[in-house]
Length: 334
Image (cartoon, rainbow, N blue to C red; front, side, top):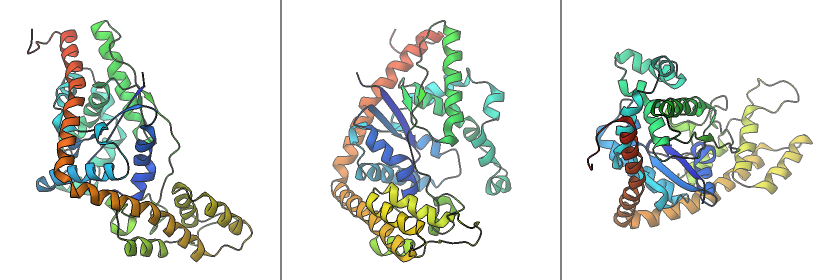
């Protein structure tokens, strides 16, 4: 039997090439080798201030985007359509150490954000986020979880909760999930290569995977190259980022040829930018066409995702049933 992989993403609206190369392309590739459960986690999206009217829209938008880049509909579920996540999350609160959750880096970073501090409101959900994330993973007894450096701490907490649960009930019930390490490029903002490509930094700092051709090419043509802060013989962050984009897009021949030009001191930035623009456009056009087809059949696609969520939910329901038996809670059927 195939090993099981679990990975989730928040419905944040746009998908940019930083997301795609850093995580979502990996989702597509993993489908060939593993049984994959991919969740759009709208419960998690509620932990920070959000627009109620946009949450459902953004959730479906993320589903459409994921399918357009090659994620199979049968592997996708929406978290709120599987309420057992929240039920297991509550149970896990009783197996999570307060001090450990308090020390989670993501909570510290987000709660210290200037907007949050000025509002004077930080939700319990933001604090408890990692415990629900542990439930997201363990409810499907995932063997592997593909994570970046910033999420390793959360997987460690997940393993701790699983261990404490197993010890409490006297049975090795939960599989301790392993980190699935894959090579993922770290894409920077083309407007400021000192920071990662991010939607939160503003429109000029990310390139939408589904952008129109003119906008995409304009953003690449205006990409920062030299900042004057590098030492002699060192590639500037801007140029390095363009080469990283070129390689990530699979333009290996262009990457090799232009790198030779760079090493020989003959690189023309206009040539590098043109190559990057065309490489990204090649991906973009395929994705845009796929999404147009999905949107033309939106009703059927939504039905498919509700069906796949229901099928995947059966796995979650069985886990919660077994957990309730082990912890002394009552089940509906007894």
